[in-house]
Image (cartoon, rainbow, N blue to C red; front, side, top):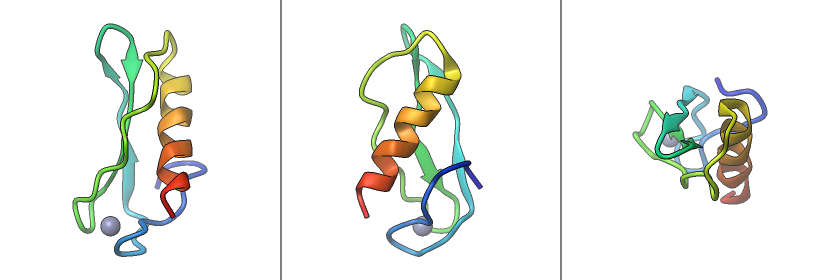
Length: 64
Ligand SMILES: [Zn+2]
């Protein structure tokens, strides 16, 4: 479960993860492990992993 993330819009699953990746700065996307759906990548590259995660969670929630 990812803090602040809504359940998966496709399967309503809550088996989610959000792993920040260092791509010239931190970016992240939420992934569902029940149906393999992935959310949008965070909009910007961040200096901080936590900020990238929060952005990815916002974008994931926006898709409902
Ligand atoms: Zn799902």
